[in-house]
Length: 284
Length: 248
Image 1 (cartoon, each protein chain N blue to C red):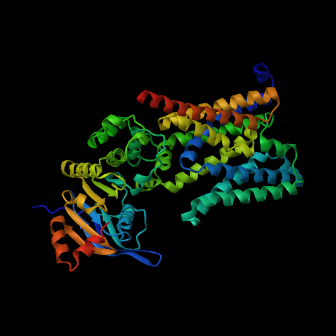
Image 2 (image 1 turned 60 degrees about the horizontal axis):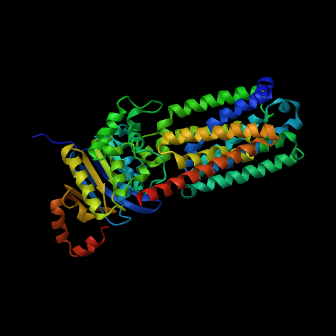
Image 3 (image 1 turned 30 degrees about the vertical axis):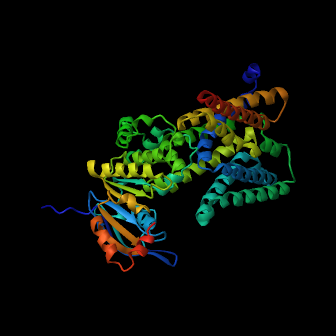
């Protein structure tokens, strides 16, 4: 495969994109999972799908829209969905979790309408739904690198604030943190990372890369930094293994990545239970 | 003789949730070095009083001053340590060490977009030493008992060396023996470090040998003054047991 990676640009692009999202998705995922917002990624991925369908529909109407990358449409819808979720949270203060299913349903509904307007599914839409190793152009790769660097810098400089808000949001407010601003930056980061990840993993499976490696790392790590380290390690393992398997067995990369991530999670759960049993045996 | 300026002033503060009045004309001052126990029945306004003081609720009527500054203009939040009621109900599966939790108390002092200072470990260790938990630095927070976790949350609150420590029902869910040692720890912080302490509690008996002042709230101030005179005040009431029965 290494020879083909050097030879074919599309394979190189997919592999590099996979490495980047294998790091950035679980990194953001740690904060999403620990803030108990795992479903937010699902809701935003469905909104992203409607943005892509809207772009493909507009592409049929005018040649100008056809030249634009549908990823941008997905990104705009994803950011719009993220902002609406934040707004709905303040409207339903006692039922904050309600914001996510509302936006998810709206995203699916809108997506279905745009898909029917664009005369149903085509190869393009399928590649965004399930991921594709040939979907990433060099232009896409540059966009993904640019966004990932910005997200990474934001996380580095806001790390202590994001940690505090994940653990105890009220304490963050009492500490004088600009909670609304930080939450706003955070949800925008989630929205754009979902939009850039979908080309490899696919819209329907993008949230799994933000949750499965984190679910496994929580079982293994003892500290917050350890959780981040393991989440990224498991994410990269699933992405690299998934892409290689998808290439050799001609499978959808999104599916293979998610299956590998699930296998890692099962191993992490078994490992923890074996540790507990071993410690019990020692104590006897 | 020098006159001490109050660290906290409530001036005719009233607050209502929609149409239901929770606090009416609350007016009192807290002097530096006090150990104030805030007691009263459920719905008597204890938590609302703290939320107003900490800026978690907007002021509707009256004024609150912190170190002589209007609450709205007050920015030196590192001078105030806070242990919330929710500390009892935090995510117990949260993967963080004691060091990481206590260090997060320094966020307010460090400022946004900045890294923790170089002497962070020394500051965290000093805070843990004050609550007699310095050997727990690398332990996972979820491995500790309820009483030990509460000490860690106090360490987080005092890591900035605040002048005021506010605690909202910190002993809920902690067994009696640990409550006593917990109150003794607060007394030590009050007497040895001169920290002003405001403790909201439902457990009046455990406070009796520690607090210097009592604020008994039931939407209005039922009593505010020295703890020593509180019992005399109760005896003067026509139905003292009824009044005590209301205290949780």
